[in-house]
Length: 71
Image (cartoon, rainbow, N blue to C red; front, side):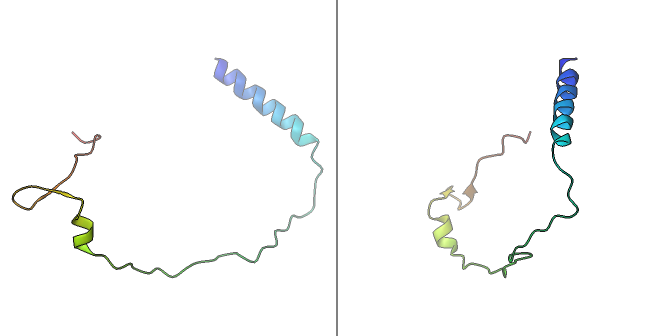
């Protein structure tokens, strides 16, 4: 197959390129921003503001589009 041949060509070319890269003993990454996290904070939710642009039927039910991937 052409895909397998192309893959073999890519691997062969990549291997040749790697031969030109010099070996190194160790690699160090010095950064100050390792394992940075932030506290989870909830935001104030206003249901009236959320429902302002929503489509609602006569009975007060929220109308949403059915997902295309469902049957």
